Image (tube, rainbow, N blue to C red):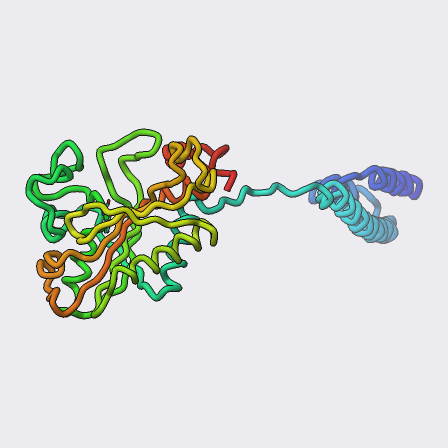
Amino acid sequence: MQTNMENLKAEVKKQLAACKKIQDVQDIRVKYLGKKGEITGLMKNMKNLSPEERPAFGQLVNATRTEVEQWIEARREEVKAQELAQRLQSETIDITLPGRISAIGHEHPLHITRKKMEQAFLRMGFSLVEGPEIETDYYNFQCLNFPDDHPARDMQDSMYITDSILLRTHTSPMQARVLQQHAANEAVKVIVPGKVYRWDYDATHSPVFQQMEGLIVDKHIRFSDLKGMLEDFLREIFGASTKVRFRASYFPFTEPSAEVDISCVMCGGSGCRVCSHTGWLEILGCGMVHPNVLRLNGYDPTVVNGFAFGMGVERIAMLTYGIDDLRLFYENDMRFLAQF
Ligand code: PHE
């Protein structure tokens, strides 16, 4: 009896020692102490014993049971600690591995250029306004003193949506809108950046491009104000040594009108391929606001006058960065864009 019990205890010990997982310990508990377990089963054997033998046997079994229970609990704690240690070991993160670097985007070269232009004008006291890209014939042409037979009004040159609605061909319709939004003869000093649309596509023309318009209306505005302001602006963008030249030109909404050239940014004026060996690059259109435009939009040209100018953002970006094909700005080729 006694030796049987010792053998059993020795067996339990051996098996516990071999446990690797909590589940193994749990299995041993079931095997020996469970409802159908071996030690539990010994109690059921009591009925086969004589009444004298029973108390001693009962005590022995109970003592064994308590002992085995303690071993199992102790072993369970041990195995649990081992399992945890193993997990900590196997699940450690190697923080010395380099992280994954996510690519950070940056501003588009046209956006950088536009911002530089805007900042220059904002410093001179202009306010920035924006207008609709889908425009009426009324604002795009009529209010700007365009004659009925002007080529820009032709279906061939402008993108019409209906007979009287088109994609604006310039930012100038905002001259009319801004004047109409103000009280008669009220002073105005705005720039208008935005997209414009023309039926054109080659290395220097895109059907969608950006312009920046400027308009000042006030008392006693002179052509020399226009000249001085544009010269300051162009020297800020292209450098202090840039030469600026005004050439007489024609726009229906300005009189007199001028086209403005800067000394070539590539050759400095000596003549090269970029400036077609003239030494000059055309950069913008401008002029004194035509009296008809003031009149058509609620202003009195005998009381106030003003000047206006308009330029292409792409052209300025091409010249600042030395890019010879405007289409590159719109092709989204990362090899090109990543250079700025
Ligand atoms: N709107 C003209 C163009 O697109 C430019 C311009 C603006 C000229 C303002 C004079 C005054 O060519």
